[in-house]
Image (cartoon, rainbow, N blue to C red):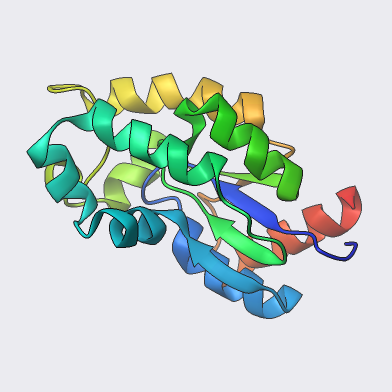
Amino acid sequence: MGKSRSVVLIGMPGAGKSTLGVLLAKELALDFVDTDVLIQLREKKTLQEIIDASDYSHLRAIEGEVLAGADLPNHVIATGGSAVYSPEGMKNLARLGPIVFLDCSAAELRRRIHNYDDRGIAKAPGQSFADLYKERQALYRQYADITVRCDDGDLQQVLERVLAALQAAY
């Protein structure tokens, strides 16, 4: 990978973007940032508090603004699961480096996520996990430069897959 190049991680909540992102940043000697934390710092509220105070579309709008204005060279960037709803934000992130989709099956994500209803997930009221998963899969695939399956294998094996895919592509 060249100078001033970031890696952007996208995927559903529970896919491992933040956990894997820290390890990937260490491997690539890059800084790490979680865009959900940037949103919380800007708003001085948790994601769930933002949703509770207004609605999911307001959180998505804030996320879009944060992503569109992000200047994060030399970072592994773990995005929120709803980042892909912001074309401007995704365009900006793509400018920073390759976008890696951490692809997990719905069944695996349900196994990992126990707090779906109060996790601060930007979803329509009453939207089921299955419907949200289906809706977002198409968007993740649309923006991804690289897709890495995350169902089988432990964290280290998924990390090695991501590193190998980045090396092969760049």
